[in-house]
Image 1 (tube, rainbow, N blue to C red):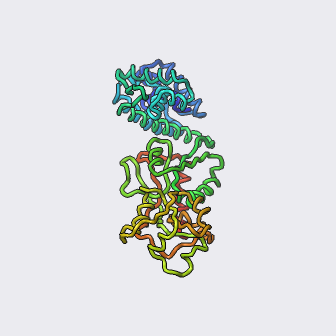
Image 2 (cartoon, rainbow, N blue to C red):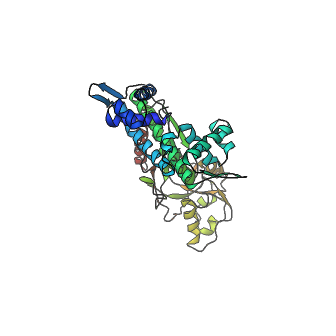
Image 3 (cartoon, rainbow, N blue to C red):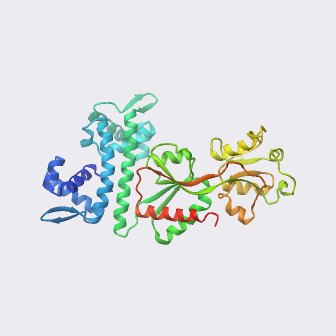
Length: 393
């Protein structure tokens, strides 16, 4: 674990800056043997040399340059957040203490935090108390109902998550230099991407990256966005938002999608009679949940005509559930055209002769603004872009 010892990483950066064990020891307030030991430990974890030794000093290898770039970003952000609370924390805070703080911020309870970390409750309480002692101020407000983080500890917890995510990226890149695949790529996938673009991209990805772990996280947009901003998810794929919801994420459009109204192949509305708002309201519907762009456009079909909404609605984003329901030739669904592409092409779904106005939306990728992908992540992104370019072909 490259980020196991934060002090070792600070010593590494000091050596990278001055190229000298002696000078790095002075800058880091440790002994020369401690510097040598820290570098040796990091090189053992990396499985390769991080410095070239010569009479002129120590110079970064290719592996060292990869680690230096990631570590400088991670430690720089972490030290700034620690320093905002108390300068002393930069020197004293350890990874286990910061993990305990982060888990407590998330759980707002020491016992639940301990369960998440797989350690005892006294261990978490002691770690947080040590941080508070060094900070000279409380980081949580205690009550009978649990603990409430201060604004500064909430900010620190978010930076800690991103710091460790960045160091995980470093470990993946170092392994990549040795021809090894470690870690995993975590993709936040919204419904339509899971039915067409992502399967194609993952198939292409596996042609070259046979063993790299990939985890697909499903959920609402808000849940996925939160995971992205916390560093738990590497990127999102799905419908983009206009405007961008927060300043610390960026979006990349891939293609345009639209909504369609679909039924089973034998639905009465396909018999040739005219489709109207009245006739659409005669049947039960499957639509996205309230507050989503898809649901807003569905409801707008009726609102603009001052028509009542359908009385029977099942809220779902599951194409699997829709696939099981429409063959009853009773239910109708409002879905993304690309999400239902396979079922439409196969004849399982029939598209009703009705246009959902202003339902066109951009589908694409969402990243943290300062995120730098690893080679494996970059390759998967390229495969996703290629699959997105095939939409409609």
